[in-house]
Amino acid sequence: MSWQKCVSDVLAADRGLSLVDRLWRFGSVPFQRLKAYQHAKAGLKVIVGDAGAFRGLPGDLGPQMHHAAVSCALNIAEGNAKLSVAEKRRLCQIALGSANEVAACADIAELHRVNAQLTGEIMNRMDQVRRILLALCGATHRR
Image (cartoon, rainbow, N blue to C red; front, side):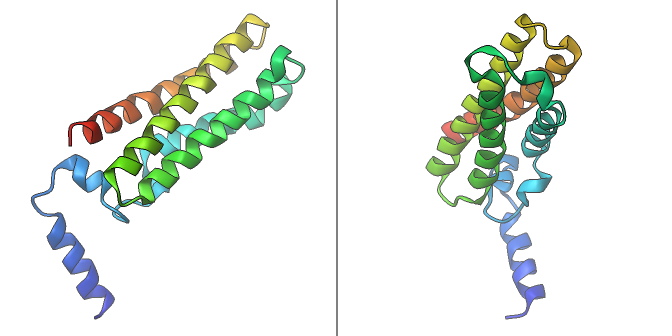
């Protein structure tokens, strides 16, 4: 079977599917194009770019925030590749928890006099991630 026929079959199979079904369809959207992944990566880029601002905070807050941001992006990417709706939902929920953890770390870092503009950018990115993931988690829950 030619690759053109495969693509044609996939496109034909997508007709009549809901937007959510098309978003979650295996292989239909590379994870790099997912808005949730893009926002998670942008938040991680802010954290990595200004890692010095988070050094020395109590409770290893900086490394914990970094770890949660990496986890968020990776779980979004992994969830995109899963065939099972239950697995997609589970990884979506894990990514949602990680996004909340990143936002909480940024909020606490602000209490320790980390630049409010920096923490605000991180919290804004994670808010975008959370909104998208809440919609996706809810959509998979209704199925």
